[in-house]
Length: 94
Image (cartoon, rainbow, N blue to C red):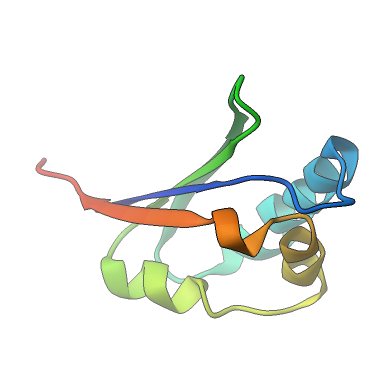
């Protein structure tokens, strides 16, 4: 199993409400329909960074999902400062 750890900051001009609505759409309209998807959650840090933690069955599934496009994903991406994005994938040992 893969744990995908994605952190980012809001894009200039984006606000928290806009991000949360876009995140809800990705959570309900996109993520559950991706091959290998297990679970996804979003969190906000006190320092202004955001985290999306997603569990996948395999690294292939995680990589393929990163290429998905569509209105919900586009709305989410508009809220994210692309220069701030960091993605780390971890392989579980159990």
